[in-house]
Length: 258
Ligand code: PGA
Image (cartoon, rainbow, N blue to C red):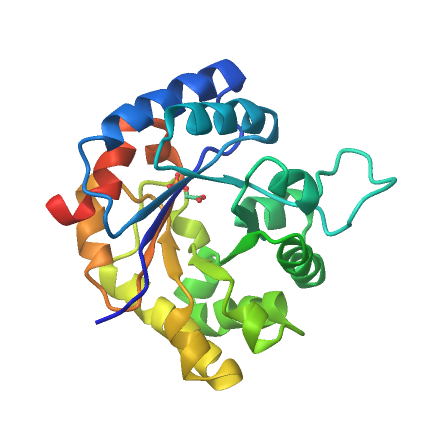
């Protein structure tokens, strides 16, 4: 039996202004009141401009929701127009920062080097990076999905000590399954999540490999989450579209009841 606490993280992407974000987190708090959260952690990753409001609502309502950002700067502070530092996020009680999401890689040209620098910056600031990896459709069709994903993982974790690697959350998100409604099968998810853990085992040993949470992401909904979560190496989900509906996301958090 794994001792890893599953994490259900809702990536709101570029949706919901602060008022809408406030409404959603309050609704989510209510919906979660009916969910057994004794062995699952719930987090939301709102847009930067929503964070302060959402944080205040979580604090005021003592909601069982952790907070995270969708990205973090690789730099500590200074002349980096438009960037948000890890320290700014920890000052907002953020626990998590997603790093290397495929949309950052695709639309903002973020490569392994920048992703690795962001992972390190997040750790330095005391945040838990959620390092996103996963192959595009062509790589999957060519049977190169494991190789491709592990190369991203190695790049993202380069230079980390075992102690640092143990703090990272990895999210396996096959690009072809993101926002497409095309969910990977539980077996597909397990295959790659397992390989991710085995690479961690080779690089950093059993303790790290057994501690790191590996999430699956890509069209997760309440209707498919339980089957995916039944797999040994899947420790949670990074949820996009379905995290924008409070009831639906609460059902995902309550996957055991499904
Ligand atoms: P989706 O997005 O659940 O809408 O497919 C997942 C993600 O990109 O994190």
